[in-house]
Length: 224
Image 1 (tube, rainbow, N blue to C red):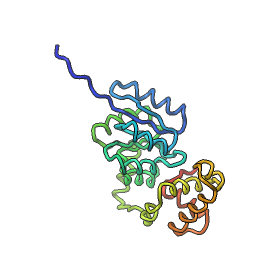
Image 2: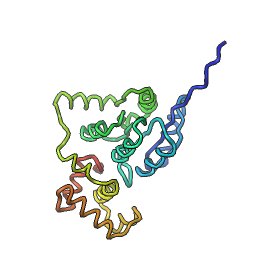
Image 3: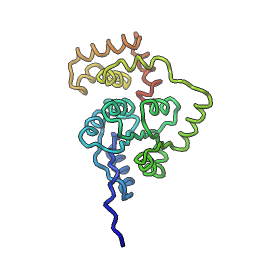
Image 4: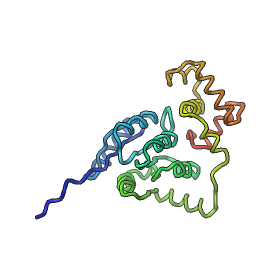
């Protein structure tokens, strides 16, 4: 009987802000002998830092992450690590969210209502270099291609924002005050005000309500 070399396990980083949900994901994944969960992150910023230190093969990233959204965190990660495969988890099959995820370089998009069926299958597919979309998502993508839908104008303006400004934008859209944002980001209220003003100027808005609507349309925050 010939002996095979020890197979390298797929290293997975779980980025999800609810601890109990992360534990459930870990149990599902580690039932497969080919997968090992090397780390967990509760915020988008933590996911960025843990990617730098843990070097995972696949990141499972929740769409709605605190501090920095899952899509924004994924975009930042792919700037310094083009090899990592990112799987977006979401409750929403909205075409705008799917399109944005694929545009920033995510290799998969799985709906949370299909986790038990799709999660392990998606990780294995991504690790092998394939893409993976939940069946409902595939339908959205196909319909989008048929309709010839294009990315919304103004995306370049968002890309001009710094990482800190994107954080401030997300927190404003979540209804946080300047004081609350300052506490969360460990910066001064005056610094928040400066970032806020620059975000408004860059995006061409004059009222907070416009900023919130923009964030929802861009998929930066998800509606309640």
